Image 1 (spheres, helix red, strand yellow):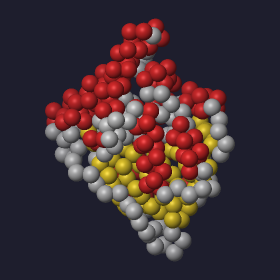
Image 2: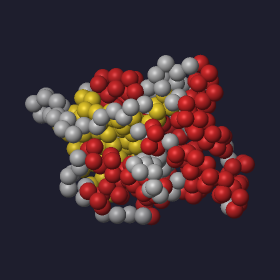
Image 3: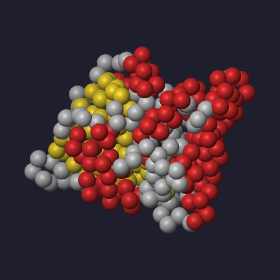
Image 4: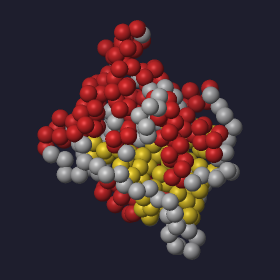
Length: 295
């Protein structure tokens, strides 16, 4: 597990997203996660929606299902899947700014709540499906992240995790100059490998139904974001103010690191498909579980 040399906690994560809220919405839009390109011709907006659709496909969502979006950001994925899959979604975010934005953009069957997932207080067996898109990285206690997902899911429930991952056996140079600074600058308490994530999921009681490495299909996100940020710095005074004076302005340094980390393979992007055992204790039939994409 890669751990930053300055410890991070939930308050630091919330402060990061609250303070940089204008930059996130200007550069990333409503979906605060990577895009997923299939042909390379998709627009960034189409690519981020494609990632959300992929999550819905992995979960095999059915109309009327109760779902949980762990680390829901502005609630855009929750809103998209509620509309396209006709599911009910409870979303959880640490950021007051993100929760306020979600409250100002309501859709039926979506409830966005300001909560810390690790102490979420939601009922046992609340949902049949859950997802976490790029939020596990911000969890101080990753084993508890998985344990809470297992608790909140009903027997037979499904869970998809889209995660930033460190390469296995990363070199000292890679850790010092790429992975540790990315964690520190992005307020990530730690970054795990595929093996570490799978071990934590199994320990929490999940079965591993599938894993897909989509690093090559998401990596262009950061070059696009870098261009948009440079443009925003040139034309938008608020972006310049935050870039020069915000407590969390150091995150801007991570853009070139992230581009290089993907190009060198130091960082991977994985989609885990997990399930909770059914009422009789038998594992759920994985059906069309994802296959790993070659590195």
